[in-house]
Structure formats: C-alpha cells, structure tokens
Image (cartoon, rainbow, N blue to C red; front, side, top):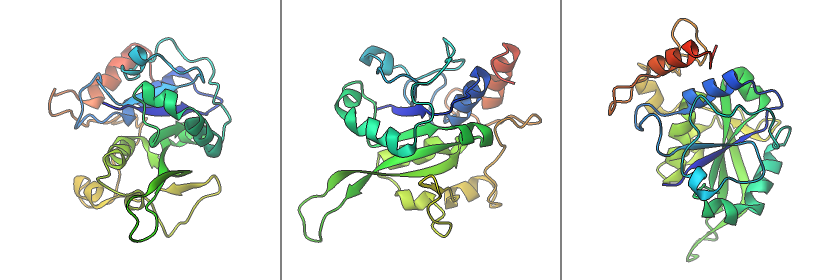
Length: 229
C-alpha cells in the first residue's frame, strides 16, 4: 500500500502541535489505529529506508522533531524536491503524485495543504496523456485531508471537487477547500466540517467502526501522557 508524505515546512512546530495534527489527519472511520498505511511525516531530506517508510508515522511522534530541513520551503520548492526524488520516493512506496504539506499557517489554523501532480490528458484523440512537473494545492482542515488525498490517489474524485473555484488561486499558490456533498450529508447538511482540532470541550469523537476506537479516546490518552495540550 502506498503511503503519502507530509512535508514539514513550518519553522516552529512544537511536538504537541505535531501530535495533534497527525491525530486529526488520521481517518478513524475507514482505517485502523494505529495505522498500517497512511501518512509519513518527512522532516529530513535524507529519505527513510523502505522498511521504515512502510510504517506510517504514529503519535506520539518519537523522537521529537527539533527542526525540519524543509522549514521555510515554498510549495514550488517542495514540488521540485518530489520531482527530483521521485524514483527514490517510489522505491520506498511513497506516492509522488499526491502529498501534503504542514506549514506555519496550517499549524496555526488546524489546516494542511494537500497537493496533486497535474496530469495532462493530451489532445483529443490522443492514445494517452502524461504526468507533468506542475502541481496544485488545496488548503484543507486536518480532518478532511485523508478523504481528499485518498480519493485523488485512486482517481475516485477530481481536484476540482474539493476546491472553492469562485475564490480563485491564493497568493501562496493554493486553493481554498469547499465542502463536498458527502461532507454536508455527514454533518447534517449544515456545511460545518465538525469539531475543530483543539476544541477543548469536544476534541473529536469520530469512531473507527472496525475497532471501535474513537479519536476522543486517543486524544485523552495523549493528553494524559502530556503529548498534546
């Protein structure tokens, strides 16, 4: 199973903040916890071995990350790294078509950036298209990131299905997230994305139907161990 990289570009990323981000980016509804595939948090330009990359990043993150070699990099620079290291990433079963970025704004707003390599379908009548060196990025709440990247990964939905096209491309090159009909149905039709990460009254109660594990229970365990605030 292919994993998805999370590039840590935030210069200030306290361990508790990162633990919360990874917890909320996990899909408790459709995947087990701890995960057997999913997010690989990358803070070093020296890629992990295949054996380590097969095991997704788990919370609490150990050892704690003191600094990231991707800190301060733009989305374009991260994309350039993915393209330059595509063969090495593929060898350790990390996707080079879809990835995520945790930047400073994201850690401060409980969002991340889901990025997708652009596919060029070619001219009408052409036998096949090709992947380009271009990319697109969407700033999205932690809880929605897995659903977006998983659907992009299997070509079940298009990038345009997740973005607010009326808002246009933002200054940093990203697009804003727009809730999908499935989101509205799950949220009772009010368009609310659910409890925001860090909500002290209700830190989240999404449940993994297969194991009965709730995010709230994991959050409380991490909080008791002083791994999240």
